[in-house]
Length: 424
Ligand code: HAM
Image (cartoon, rainbow, N blue to C red; front, top):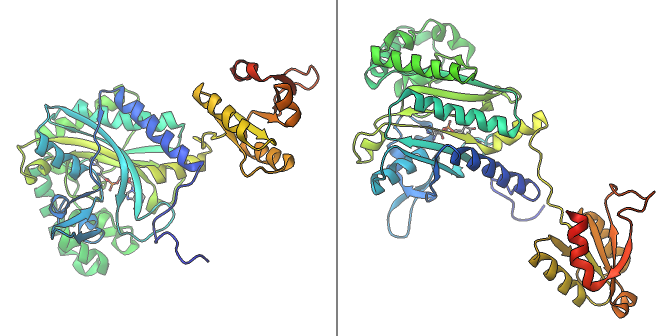
């Protein structure tokens, strides 16, 4: 066992998996940019206060934050999510609205690590600030849906809820609080603690003891104002118009405190129920004001990259892209020719690799096979003297019967056009 290993909940992402990560972000960027979203790149660290505005009843803030005092005496934290940073950036830079942005990057939460739950994990996401239109909620939800389709994922369920406007939510929370307090003794000790912090979160309880009390709890739909009811209706009508299937889940409150109106979650069909949220989001009001900006509505989502890739593995889709090079150069004359040829090929846009340390022909050919290259270019002293190189196909997909694509010696000067032709 080496002395140092990654700390719990942190991982090294090695090739070729890292190439898959990059492609994941690339596919997401493509979906978002086609809908007019621009990328925002936020710092990993923010003033602790930025995240405290996410709400005092949020575990992410109270229990899971990586925070410390820096050398300048500032109390800062590693970001646990990006919505707060985007809102802080909005208040700082005051861009024109609606401001449509997408993002990607690592988040940090001190959670108990397990499959699909890490202390450093990656998200992709979008936020739109400055519009209340319910069809914007639909656009946002539909972009997440489209992204899963682009990955090839089939088993994704969309859960939808509305928490009403701030006033509705407040009245609902009061009613829930009264209901749970009337049944306090029957609630699990854990839920009794949760109740003191946020009665909504008690709805999240998966404990059998709580189930009957949760089932009998007041329902949010009975607390909607006319406006909130109409907003929710319009969101559902928009999703239906786009042919996006959804299930209304009145208990979907989500883990962050800032949600109002629409909330939603994409759940993966293959994952354990404790970690089956592939992504989620909703509308939030009040966050911009609490960060010192003008009253501005927001809506967005974040999708967990790590977890979504686990779901892709389960469904056998979105495999790691090949990192194989086009050409591997085998040079037994000392290595200078390999240096020249790889440089020439790379400059012309072909990917190429080579062996080092003047290994034997056999060892270099092994390395060529391992590289996954389509062709080996072989130079020994005979070829060097004759001004030629040997080009040998390494993959099985050439036809040995006709010799098409078989090994051949060609003039050194013809190498680049020859490879360009056979690789095209
Ligand atoms: P969230 O539900 O906390 O929302 O996180 C979104 C997604 O990030 C989750 O559905 C999950 O896939 C992934 N995730 C969260 N924690 C972990 C973890 N410890 N390990 C692996 N994956 C994880 C937010 O972060 C909000 N900012 C979403 C949002 C944007 N709401 C409005 N705009």
